[in-house]
Length: 430
Image 1 (cartoon, rainbow, N blue to C red):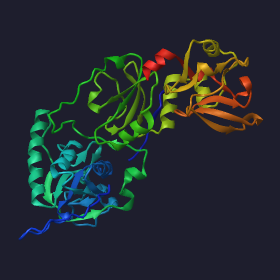
Image 2 (cartoon, rainbow, N blue to C red):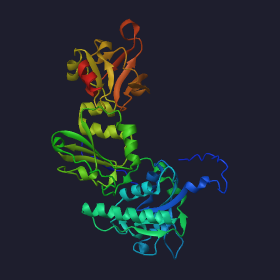
Image 3 (cartoon, helix red, strand yellow):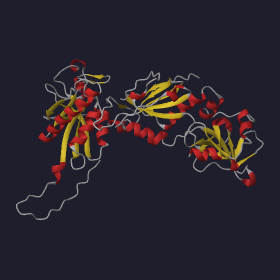
Image 4 (cartoon, rainbow, N blue to C red):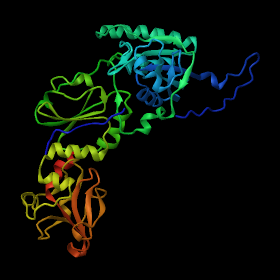
């Protein structure tokens, strides 16, 4: 099997306003609740990822994708991306209108996120997105926002200069008009859950915190999984929470920023986050750009770890081990411990529930609670119940009712998709 698997997955809060009671104060007007509600229109390249990023900030009421700061034609996605307007100074910019509660999220905090989440030194572009519609711009709605933005721009310039970057190209203007983008652009990342976040950030932050340097020496030997992530990346958070939060596999998994890949040989683009890399001896074997769901991740990991083997065929093509195979002989009389999923490291079966069925396959009375799922299997003209790992979805074997000791069930399991850990080693790893 070709171990080179390159898959590029292309892309591309509600605020409760409580009523406020005011004590009667002579010659004083009650403060209006709406006085804290402010709007900023921000351009930092493609608006898809930016919209989602702002929506995740506590205090943001709404974030809308749209167009602003253009003239001479009716704004639409088709019009602003036309090749004839690629370098048109009158073109509209892709922007996000951010409505926020300034009592919960200050203008300063919002703009710090804005500057840190893209490269403001690039003019009319962000990464591979080139054109005037991708320009860096801040369109303010009151003078206080203008003052804050100008001050932060000056502060960030000093930090960027110290880090070796050029001059900030961000324009600062009053908002004249905002055109809401077409509906299919709104909440784009929600509608397209398997995409990626374009990360063009410089890594320079307002906080006096240097990006942590890492030592990649350990990654130069053996197999490793490297996930390129970034701050303000919803897809990265989703991948962590839904796919690898419970990963305990034997191939080490590492998170890196795009700037932390020194000494590694990478072929994939590193500006899309997350990007999942399968590395061997410091070199990329396979790269996947964008969010991977659990099933896709473990199938790719299976190809990387198992290669063209009986174990891969059993796990992903519902194959069956030969009876009394080598792996069965190794596992049939181990010491006290647990059998784990070969890919995820999740516990599946306990030696306390193992018995010798004489069939040539590992047999257990029970699985570890919650570790397997059950599926109807009518292949080969038989009616059986298939068992799969709940963590990875790989095929494990079948369960046969009342064929175990004392009338218990018999879980007939393929040994090649398992690994064994002694009880002590397993408890230490938890």
